Image (cartoon, rainbow, N blue to C red; front, side, top):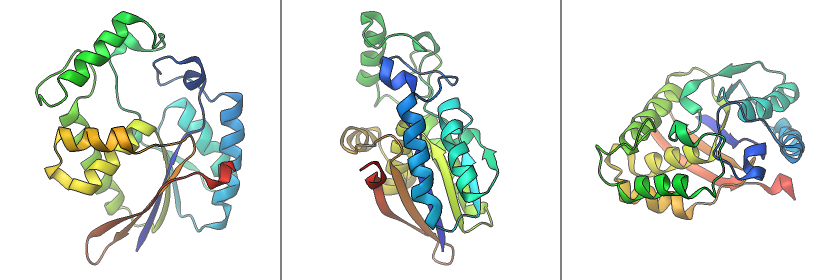
Amino acid sequence: MKNIYFVRHGQSEGNTLRVYQSASIPLSELGHEQAQTTSRRLSNITVDLLISSPYTRAYETAEYISKTVNLPIEKNELFRERKRPSIQEEKSKELEELKAIDKAIADNWEILSYRHSDEENFEDLKQRAQKAFEFIESRKEDNIIIVTHKNFLHCLIWYRLFDSNVTPKEAKIITDNFIMSNTGIVWMQFDEIKKDWKIVTWNDHAHLG
């Protein structure tokens, strides 16, 4: 039985400034504290492998966990954040022209071929979620921590609930209704004999008090 612990990164400076985030945005001061607290929470479980999104805020979170579990960090692009239009990166979420892009993407979410510019659309995310689970299943390690991001965690959860049959409408319901806190933990299990996945916990953030 594989145990997979997905961890959302700690609060980032982008979270506090209300900007569209790029790959290089780091943790905030509170985010560092959250990451350190989370590392202590994870110190009591067996860990064979530590993976992180290469984005700065995720990797900084993973560094605290790495010191606690005494394992190196393996970067993996599969677990990076959902790609938004590049024109939005590091700009305020209050800008009307950028909010209009969000609305256009949301309004056309169920049109599988729609793409505003260079963002990931529903089909892209579904394929990446599938590859992420296939990657996990292929690893020999039984106990894995993966530091990732809120939006991609939503993709993983809707893919896990509906598999390749998931529709854009179902995905949106999950995204709109499943809250994910900074450093929240999602625990999943994979039965290698039955080839069966289970979601054990969602957004466990008791370590934050």
